[in-house]
Image (cartoon, rainbow over all chains, first blue to last red; front, side, top):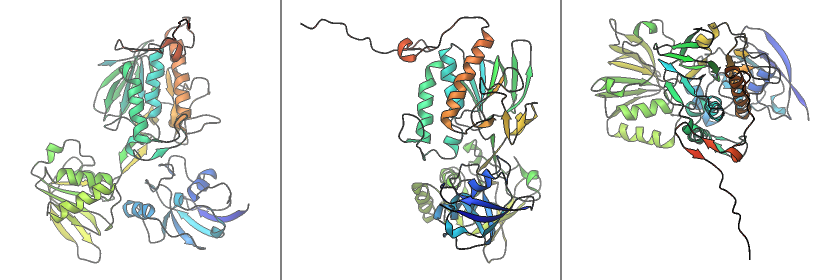
Length: 109
Length: 351
């Protein structure tokens, strides 16, 4: 059981250094929601099924994220505001390997 | 004009189940939903995905749960206004509310239950400067009336199920179907992807990938679109219709102007007693409401719907005695004259 440190820039441009548990089977979208860094109803709209891209983030510093799965890749193929460093927060499961991750929450919709 | 006891806004699982609980108390329901089919998110977003936390169902597909709910409420004959959005409400007199939709359909009811989930699903629109100029002038976000497109040239953009399915369907109706997607890969049911592949091979669908539509052209209506294929010069394609299908995004919409107490895109209900809002006679149930301890779960929506119905009954029948009935004991009497009941036990002597 351990916590990791993540730096998240919200949609207003404010930066938050937060601590995320690795043992609660949470993903980055849920972490953002639990810290209320994006307004309810504008993040995790589909519940975390890689079907809406409301949890899109830009990865600023990548300590070694798991590669993208097919569903995530396809959703980003349809989403707006996509950049080469885009990922879906709901598909990033909080793990020790994410210590030091830095992301910025993308605009929505 | 449609009249009913409880007008439910939103045909998701919570709204549908409310019809059942209201029916047990002899109250009639009518449901408005912006989508053309009942089921809300379950039908629109993930009909083929399983849900594991519906009590009594180890696993049930979202679409199947909707079908089951429709079957369960059938005998209470709910009315539906589908493909329309509730816009405004007013109090007509002490007894009646009036709710009008975006298409002008008038509903009169004695109580309103907002079961709107995430809100009204609205199409995600591509970002182009002049896009509003072409809306309903060749630019469509839904295929409502397929016959509309007969012998016309159609360009569809998108990479999900709806883009694939409508390309397949319209290939038999339109004179020309072009499907444009930012990727070479499509995200959809396998058989839809295969059908598009077949139709492409037969020359019935023109596929342009990876490419993006960057502009709409035309004088007062869509006449052509500009497409940029990765690494190539832009080209113009003549077309009568452009249908971007980039999914739907939920918005609270006009309901946010009703004077309800709203917090974080949810309607505040002042208690977990009957889920009534700050406006008497208007309730909010399911994912759309918030109160201390709120959980956005289907099973909690069912509970909220049940308590809401009890509260409406008490409002409409002040002082009238009733007791909670168990369906196993009392059976279910439909408004259609049907009756469901437990089989009688056999009383017989054993020699």
